[in-house]
Image 1: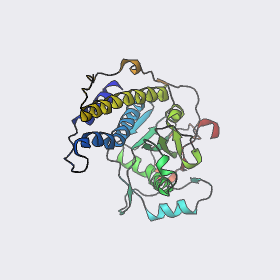
Image 2 (image 1 turned 45 degrees about the vertical axis):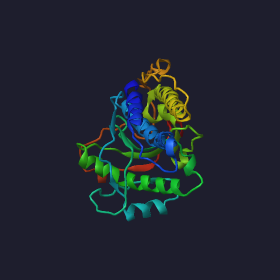
Image 3 (image 1 turned 120 degrees about the vertical axis):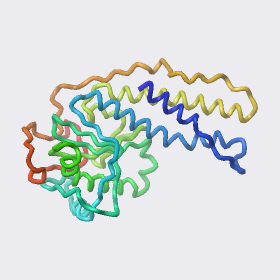
Length: 279
């Protein structure tokens, strides 16, 4: 986690803003502020990958994830009233103009389940628009082809259940019925004790480092000598602990032996990700 924060800060500092006739000397400060959403979002994704890699039950996919959103899948989602679809799995080998690229796909090999994850720095800007509902529709539509895609593209990985989770980095109140998970709940999502604490500590450290950058740039612009900014990692948040939870966390999937047969013949359940208590 230390290296991820250091690299993110280095990437922010390395950016060279283009001259701006309106902003003038303030262009550097404006550029820093504009870049924060992108860099924080990427940092959260990379940290989630690092955490998932500590759980040997998990397979985390983060590259080349553009998946088709088919009209058939969208129709199935639109006609569903229960929030869960059972017995449906669509062919992934289709050509469509509409696609969706998840930030992460996490497969739990022990549970035979998968979670489609979209990381958001904050979902607050989505709540008063239809963008959140549209995002959820695309995620659910992709979930319907995911079992076939995993089987064909990733060494016959087989899952019986696919959930979606929009992870809110700001940890606003969650709404699992809408697929929204607060960052502080990822212990349940990943089955890893300490994951949320590690992410919170990393985010606090990143915030400290970013504010130092902004202060230094602001002081430079107004002509006051900026204090020396040490790019070394803040040791107060440098200790992260994340350990596996080995108790019986139930995600609604029976622990049955999975054969190497064609996944389309299996009973697949698709819906929003749930905690063990609500399964």
